[in-house]
Amino acid sequence: MANKDPGEQGEAINGYEAELWKMADALRGSMDAAEYKHVVLGLIFLKYISDAFEERHAFLSQESELAEGADPEQPDEYRAEGIDLFWVPPEARWANIRNMARQPTIGQIIDSAMDAVERENLALTDVLPKNYARPALDNQRLGQLIDMISNIRVGDAEARSRDVLGQTYEYFLAEFASAEGKKGGEFYTPRSIVRLLVMMLQPYKGRVYDPCCGSAGMFVQSREFIEAHASGNGNGGRARGDISIYGQESNHTTWRLAKMNLAIRGIDGQIAHGDSFHNDRHPDLRADYILANPPFNVSDWGGERLREDVRWQFGVPPRGNANFAWVQHILHHLAPRGVAGFVLANGSMSSGQKVESEIRRKLVEADLVDCMVALPGQLFYSTQIPACLWFLARGRKRRGEILFIDARQMGEMRDRTHRRLTKDDTKRIADTYHAWRKGTDDYADEPGFSKSAPLEEVKKHDHVLTPGRYVGMAPQEEDSEPFAEKMTRLVTELQAQRSEADQLDATIAANLKELGYGR
Picture 1 (cartoon, rainbow, N blue to C red):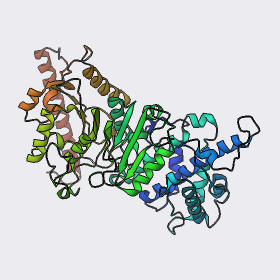
Picture 2 (cartoon, rainbow, N blue to C red):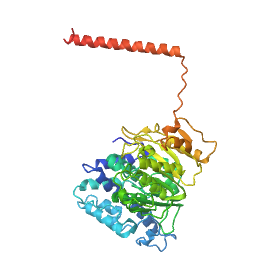
Picture 3 (cartoon, rainbow, N blue to C red):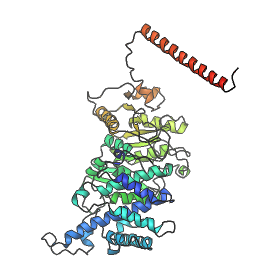
Picture 4 (cartoon, rainbow, N blue to C red):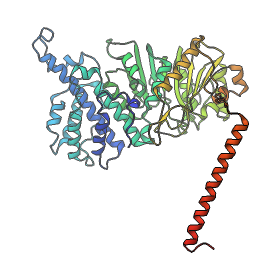
């Protein structure tokens, strides 16, 4: 697998994430990446909470006024510190795991350690992987993996401030998504897409919601987002920021990844397990910001059991495609002045299916569509279906208009099959959106890229929201070469090519004759 630009997963702080991945992947052997993912990420998580525990333990053990009277073996001394500190019992501390790495029972030792951590920390109940003793997992390879992860050091304050383990965890998530292809991509949204959504929505204060949160990428992959939202709701009134995080994930295994991914970054949030359509775990939530990457074109979403659902204010979604069920679920949870940005398949912008086109018409005429962005292809691990971004807003600043952005020609290839938007790309798109929303002189239509279209124009296009219909063609570079000179040059080039072709034909004929095939 080709190494990726660290800008896709976050800056490679110590420059060793890629090397660690190579080592970890080499230890996988014949194990499927989907299984191995939980082996590696579970160990990284255990290393993280153990290192954080040991740092606090060392502080409580020292003789100082700050630590006076503290008992380093008292669980409440750690639980009181918040989401990023857990009580780690002796058998689960990394030093013990590392010392036992070469034992033939290391698999059972790790399973017992995971059980002990869950037992002592209710927030981690049913979250950690506990099948390290399976026969398919070679104990020698597991021991080598433990040795490798032991080299990731986060005990000192500098390493913690630079989020070394968080960066490593994120890098590995992306690599596993790439290794698993379509299957793995379902739980991971590429960082460049997350970065674009965050830059456009700027969710720095309020309630943030993702109804299909996967591995919690919308909450943790953006550096700016993490710095602005160190904690949130559900932490006993000890919030250190102005953001409250709410999410839901239907796949239980992926939900566990999300819980670990949040905890390893010290981010608190209400992340529920369940199907957002049939078991909405946040029914009364009205979010200020919604970021999501729903699965594309899902046909078996159980729509026939939800025909009378209160969320379908703009029409009952078709049973064979969940796209507009997601759109209306998101709108249902949007606060009176909330803004939502989410990914959908391109077909959602122009589908001629009667029910879908009617829902789209009502959304446009209700003045809820703020911006549409057409994305380049090959951005996602899970699908090659072309995708777009929808931005919906209540209490819009630019009423009666929709901003269309055509970004299909943007991005750069990361490897033979995957593209990413560069930071310059995301900045250009986001800056265009913010300038337009402000309604200042900073915004002007850019042919081939952006157009602010009045709703009347959209209606003339039968409420189709494909940006290419509105932005027009990019201006062509002026050709200053006189026509007569150009024709002379082109004829000369054509004659030279014909002459070269004649010479090649003659050479081939001579070779064939020499071999006895010619006349």
